[in-house]
Figure 1 (tube, rainbow, N blue to C red):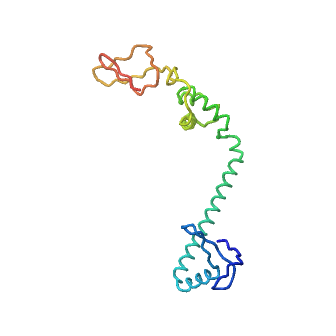
Figure 2 (figure 1 turned 180 degrees about the vertical axis):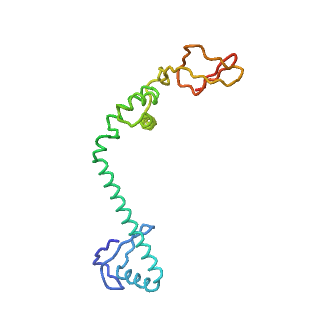
Figure 3 (figure 1 turned 45 degrees about the horizontal axis):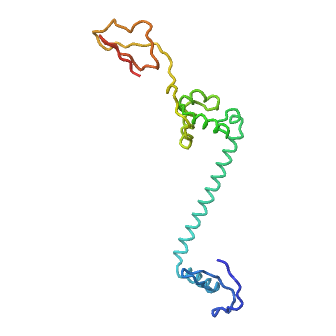
Length: 200
């Protein structure tokens, strides 16, 4: 608390003119003698040694914790700096700069499905995988408004030859017509006497 020298106000306790000012809740200013306050603190410490010891222990623990976390923060900061300056990080950067973020937002505004964009553009942005780029773009999409709707295909599918699984003893020897293909990768194909089922 700040102490002010007020010559026109003399303390009846010590005869000094130094005061500490404390504003009250009612709007008035309280004048407190710093000498009297110091004497009261000494008297309280002499009458309450256990509480003084407890406060000292608590303050010591707080100081130790503050020192520990300060050293920890410095160590983490130093480790991150070393990683950023390392040769491996320079060869394989995985950080998106401002231009990358701007390009991602422009692609999101087109309305094209993010998975399609990520599958096509993850190598250009330097992402380790399409899934990593998709996660980043989903996060950006929360604050990016789509300008138009996407009218193209929703998924990227490739033609895959059908693989069959006979599930009934009555249909053994049956198979799909020769040259049958379908879009996407099927988990299994079941052939029955009068139809077949493809599971994706």
